[in-house]
Each structure stands twice: as C-alpha cells, then as structure tokens.
Image (cartoon, rainbow, N blue to C red; front, side):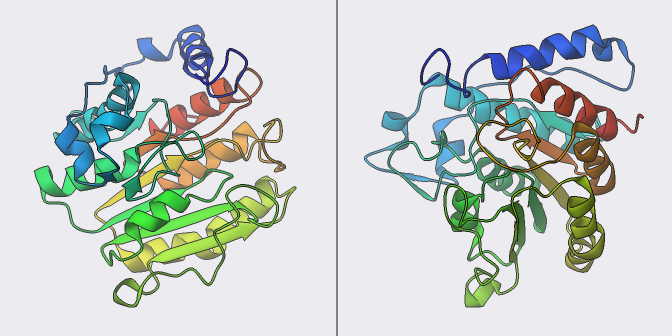
Length: 278
C-alpha cells in the first residue's frame, strides 16, 4: 500500500473475496480455493537480477504474490484443477529483468517467475502470455523479448496516451525471437465490440499458429469503463467472454483500480468463465 487511499491497496482483494463469498462460489464443486505459499529467493532469481540484490528490494508481500502464482501452477500441473486464477497483489508486469526498485507498482514480475518455474520444475517449453492489462507490460516484454519459446501478446491503451508510453507494433522481438512479441495498441474508448473483434480476428489465430503448451493470462482489468487510471470502455461481461474464449490455463491478477465498482465483478466473471460456468 502506497497510501490509505491509493488504488493499489488491500481492498483490491478484500472486495473480490467478499463478492465471491456473497455469490457462493466457494461452495461450488467446480471451484477450489488454495492458499499462496512464499516464493523462495532462487525462484525470483530465475527471472530477475536484483540491484543490489533481490532480497534487498522485496517484502514478504512480493514473495506471497509470486508464491500464489507458483501454487496455482502446481495445482494445474498436478491435475488437481483444470485452470487456476492467482488472485494476488502486488502485480508484476512492469518489472523488468534487472530490478532496482518499483516500476508501475511492480517490483517482481510474477508471471515471469511462474514461467521460469514451470520450465525448471515441469519441463514446459512453449508458453503464451496474453496480457489484458490496459497498460503495456513493458517489463514482461523486456524479459521475454529474446525468448522464441514465449509468445507475449499485449493489447493495451495506446502508449501515446498512457503509462508507460511503450508497446507499439514495431516492437516485435529480437532477431532470435522475431515475431514472438506482439503489441496491439488500442484507441482510448475501445469497448467490448472492438476488443472481441481484435481477439477473434487476430489474437486467436496467432495463438493457434504458435501452438503453446500453456496459456497464461496477465489479467489486468483496468480496461473497464469505470477504472480511474485509464480511458477504455470494456465491461465485466466483455472480460468474462474474453476469458471464455481464451481458455487460459492460469490467470494472474494484474492491474484494475476500480476497486469497488468493477474489480469484484470482473474477477467473478473471469472465475466463472474459467470454471466453464455461465
């Protein structure tokens, strides 16, 4: 928490948990709740170089956030569940390979930590990361830019209008990984129709061509029309339908700062979609 009223605060998860309890989702046989575990420093070091060190830069919250992703990965890979959603904070997709402080509320790139864990522990090779946050995931792009086995797709509000000012179509990966970094900037005001047209007409075909073993959704939810930090017009239903189409194996909560008006409902919709429910 940066300040008591800052959008990156503990209520981001508490309101969601209240909504899930109110809807009775934890009583459903299709849904199982797991507790996070603490990621180890060597888990973080598979993805990061810390300056002066990772241990000096993080708090227990960062180890818990990354550890929640690892717990989700274990649950899926062991076959205990078909899909998992890591509802964790703080987020991570602005954290680059070399970490020397906070960037866009992110210190540890929790998706990248999970990707390297999946490869190290389970031998997974081809992974697709679809980033649905309204901000370009410049940290994820930095980490995966030279990796031909990771397809990174980010759609986001045009970087000319929003932090971090990156994420343009000509950023396509290094020569050894050419075409595995896909940026799809969108005009402010894009809503459900534009988003699904983009997914159906382009993203789905790119995923089909790449044939990933696993799909990870960096599930940022600040494309919602009520988000105070951006200017998009996606609804909770639009997000849920996207999750239903994407069929991600693991989703990880990223941004989304309409803490009361949107986040609980978007999270609920994504969970229902991942559980193959209406």
